[in-house]
Amino acid sequence: MKGRIFGTVVGAAGLAAAAGAVGIARQNRVIGNRAAGEQVAFGALHSPPRVVVADDAVDLHVEIDEPDDFGGPAATDDDLTVVFVHGYSLNLDSWHFQRAAYRGQVRTVFYDQRSHGRSARSAEENCTLTQLAHDLRRVIEHTVPGRCVVVGHSMGGMSVISLAEQHPDLFGDKVVGAALISTTAGGLDPGRVLFPMLPLGLGGRFMGRAVRTLDRGHRIVDLARVWGRAVADVVTDRYAFGDDVPASQVEFVYSMLNATPFAVVADFYPAFATLDHFEHLEPFGRVPTAIVCGTEDKVTPIGHSRKLHSRIAGSSLLECEGAGHMVILEQHKQVTAELDDLISLAQGQVLS
Image (cartoon, rainbow, N blue to C red; front, side):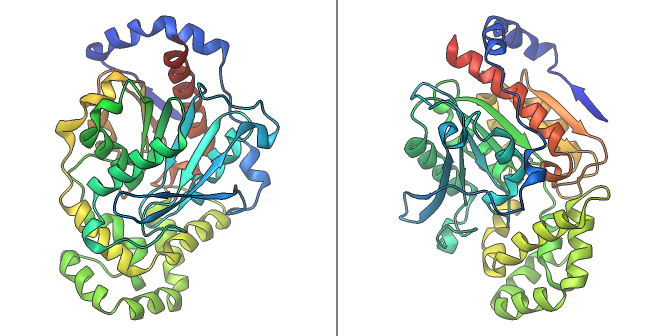
């Protein structure tokens, strides 16, 4: 079951103004193949790798799914591109179901955030949300010939929010739609995001000091994460998902978390502790914005998404009943359906 809460009266005028664009969009409505990902092994969806060089010379691993490579029409420079931005300690493979759903239908871009996946390691001082916003801007500049929708999950959503703060001029011009999934603009308990990444369930009020202490012995921590696999599976299941999911999903998430060195986990930790961007959300009110969260999210609880919705005029809020932080896997069909609506609205803006 899913609950929808649409924009308040404040945002209604903006939606009404877009009504003509919506009519056009429905003529070109995108319906993702929501079951496609169930037919493909996790981690098997890839396109030829490309490199986008960040402004501090870090190489970002990028993959682009062109529609005509998968049986769809050839994209033109005026067609919409959807850029997906993954979360903390994950990689671009986390968008498995959404990537499979849109292959051959929409031009999509996926990339590994700095120090994650196949991208190069970053200097510790550049492991900030500000830098992640600059990285996203570079990816858009180098991979999007026309306009785009940006879709961020968890830390990826924070990257998108930081993009709105650092580069607000992009919204309504280059960026014509946004999705913020299982994320927040501030007020996060940073310890929550670390539980699946710590060995043997370490955590508690001493989290900040513990992270730095553990970082000094990060190689031992990485070994402990492997040795504690059975416990880690349970912790991952508990904190990433809200309900029973196939074991393959738990193993898939664990494999991504475990592949991220603890030194990287520690490098990004301060970014969550100091996050406070709720006063910089105005650019999202210029474009269709979808907010999605599971009601049982233990990392970025549903209250964060409700607050984002209350602060972004005209936004929509999809609450996925019973889902946890990895709602993009756990209730992927609902998430893709919401993205269908968002992409249709954004296409209307492009065509109008």
